[in-house]
Length: 269
Image (cartoon, rainbow, N blue to C red; front, side, top):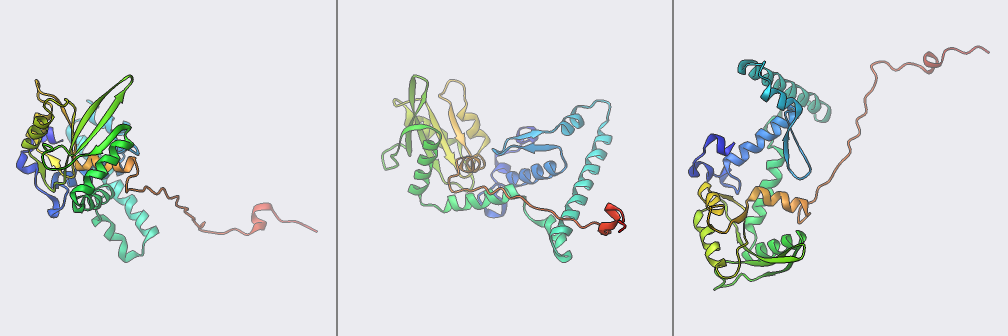
């Protein structure tokens, strides 16, 4: 969506309510939640979003014009709202039922809370968290080296692929906004003569220029993890994030309770 709409760096850096999440990221989270409720998107436990068969048909069915597609989306949206209202009436008193529509999307809500805590961490605490994350991801010999004169490198670890291993240099950025292109160049410069595998981890986002620079032809590519992906990784490895799967029992009462004799027939003695 960001590529299709060609958002500028200035637009991508606008924060939602001065929090760690960007306004565009927040609205996209809402959009994913709505589309999932309408049956057009689905997501796995790791936050991988996929267009459903219904969504694919709607997108690629050439026999339906754009106007008909919009009408179909409105119908799905109306059905989603009606279902939510029915669920609200079952779970909440009537006065509270209409408030659900104003609640934040669940995904955006927990990620916002988590990012706020990460931003509030001391620098060395965030570096140790990155160290633990790398260890959980099967990195070896992971150590925190964040200190003056390290060239901006905070964590170093070795990643093994089969019979060989190579060092990975990590820089941690507790940002509320977007990481500029200069951070990418600084990390690449600090890696000169030491290795060519780098990783930038931030609680914020990356500017479009920073993302382009990270994968620029002719330069060592740098992997980058923004706040949204960082939350997914912490959830996956259960580092400070616990997922509780609850089973809800729904009990319904039949409109008319029939006496036993109606079900088994009358008996004569």
